[in-house]
Length: 276
Image 1 (cartoon, helix red, strand yellow):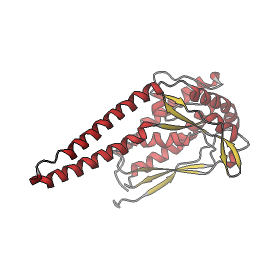
Image 2: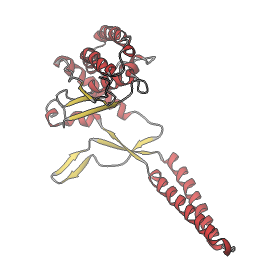
Image 3: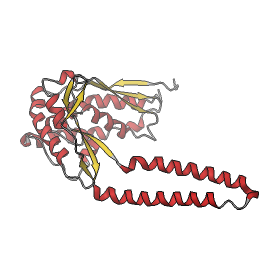
Image 4: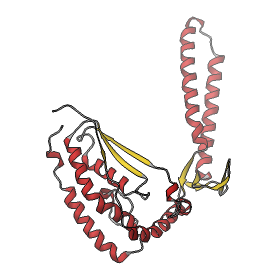
């Protein structure tokens, strides 16, 4: 039957061997710390305390607040202030020069429109005067939710939605799900679901192949601290720097996973019937 159905596929909780997880955890934490501490040309860490006050006391911050460097932000603020002065002067001139009383309705209409656009511009500029972003502190997360605190992490359900395998290529959907399954998070605390609103058989067949490749890809990522964890992006990089602690095993595992992914990538999903 060609009627479109909504299919939700629970795309596996992929277990990694305990030894591989423990050996890769230290390298992952070290790489995360280096990534957080890396210099940025635009963002710098904002001055804030190391703890956050709560009703039950204080707890260490699990994120860093970043702000734009002053040498970039101050000229922008000056430019916005100059434009604000010009806008105020323009409105003042419009109010003082209402000489043609025969077209007051036209003047009033243009004033309402200009006032609305000016107000919208101000609302748009306010967040840009002091932009900040929150960056998870992976080292702090690892310290607080290490091997002894993983049970306190919340459960997460990740939903990936798709409709048309032509407008949304199967390869993108497959790599999205594989990267989610390889996330550095306790495997018993999260799950990934595919919501196929188009009811296409090709997505179902693709999930079957994902279920066979994920048990190889996810442990490989966790064991060797692979980034990025989308196989298409990872194998498409010109250089793949290794930040793990088992360089001897990495080349053997890398060749095996790359060979399996090449076979997986050649699967003719596009030749399946379009709908169920």
